[in-house]
Amino acid sequence: MKTSALKLTLAYAIAAVIQGALSSRIPQDFMPDLALIVIVFIGLRLPMMQGILACAAFGLVSDVLFTQSIGLSLGGYTVVFLFTKIVSALFFADNALSRIILVILSGFLIKLYYAFALAVVGLELTIKIYPFAILLSGALAPWLVKMLESWTLRNEA
Image (cartoon, rainbow, N blue to C red; front, side, top):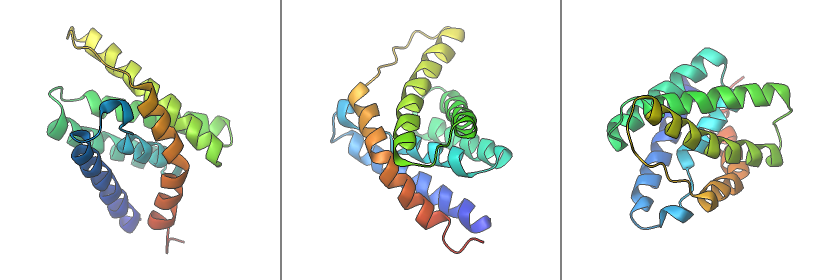
């Protein structure tokens, strides 16, 4: 299990670095959320406590490195993890279409969470939703999840 935790951490780091590097070169309208796909993958594969801890840790790192609002991604990633866990338990979420739908719904859910969390604390920041970027994230999800499965679950029995 230590190996897959290290691999998941590395996968999240790679996704965050790629996303950060491309964000200045690709318009936000066309920038898929690679980190969100990793969070959905965690929701599909990790047990509850490990997943919550992993998503909270990744969210905190994201907050510290990329945002001015500490706790926003921490909460958002945790909400997406719980949403993925619940939906995958209720519906058989182990095919390409369900992964696409999960990532698209998670993309909108995390934006809704950000808007709600900022409103609760009284910050007047505008949360922009880029529907095409969310759809693109969904389109990439089956391929990236399959790649993550083969990489993180290899040699695990």
